[in-house]
Image 1 (cartoon, rainbow, N blue to C red):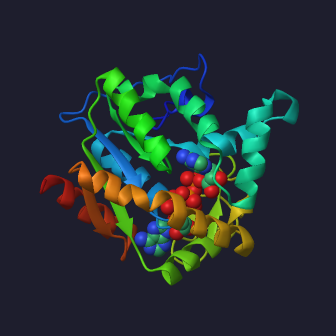
Image 2: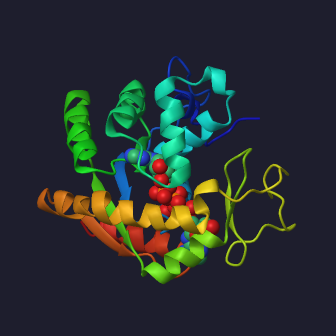
Length: 247
Ligand code: AP5
C-alpha cells in the first residue's frame, strides 16, 4: 500500500528514505507551527499536509519513535533525552539540533515542510535560521496558534494516541469509532506519558519560559501569523489558510 504520508526519512534519520516523494505542489510552503503544548499543532499539521502537500516534521514524533526501540539501540544522548521528555522537560538544545541537522535533507524536500515542536528555544531558532540559509530554503511563515490555558489542559487530558500509525484522538472531541481502538490501523490507543497532570504543568512552564519568546523573535522578522485555535480542527485549518493567503 502506498503511504501518501510517508515520512520515514524524518522519523528514522540516517540513511532512511521516504518510499514515496510528495508531488511537487504549485506553491511550496515552509512553515513553523508554534504554540503551547496541546494547542493542536499536530492536528493542524495533518490537515495542512492534506491541503498544502507539505510534510509534517515533528521533533516529538522522532523522540516517540526512538522510545519504541530497545534501549540498547539508543545512544546515551537519546536515553537522556527520553528521560527529560517523560518528565515534561525540554530536551537539551544540542541533542535536538544534532537530530535536526541529521535530517536536514527533509528541509529541502520538494513538498515543503510543516515544522511542529521545533524550534522551541531562541538557541534552536537561531540554529534553524543558519541551517535554512545554508540549505537556501526560506521560511514562508510562522503560524502561532493561540488558545486559553484551560481549554489546552482539557485537550491534553482527553488526548489518546495510536502507538502504531501515530493518529491522534480525543475522548470527547475526536473519539474513535470503537472506544480505545484506532480507526486507521486497529491498534489499542494509549495516553501519552507526558500528558499526566504533573508533566503537563512542567511542559506549560517550559513553554512560557523558553518557547513563548519565539513569538517576538519571528514577529521581528516579519514572519509571524497568529491564528485563534478555537473551534473545530477544520475551522482552524481554514482560518490558517486564509491567514497565509492574506500575507
Ligand atoms: P511534542 O510532541 O512537540 O509535544 P507538544 O509541543 O507538547 O505538543 P503536543 O503534541 O502535546 O500538542 P499539539 O499542539 O500537537 O496538540 P494535538 O494536535 O496533539 O513534544 C513532546 C516533548 O518532546 C516535549 O515536551 C519535549 O520533552 C520534547 N521535545 C520535542 N521537541 C523538542 C524541542 N524542539 N526541544 C526540546 N524538547 C523537545 O492536540 C491535543 C489534543 O486536542 C488531541 O487530543 C486532539 O485530538 C485535540 N484537539 C486538537 N484540535 C482540537 C480542536 N480544534 N478542538 C477540540 N479538540 C482538539
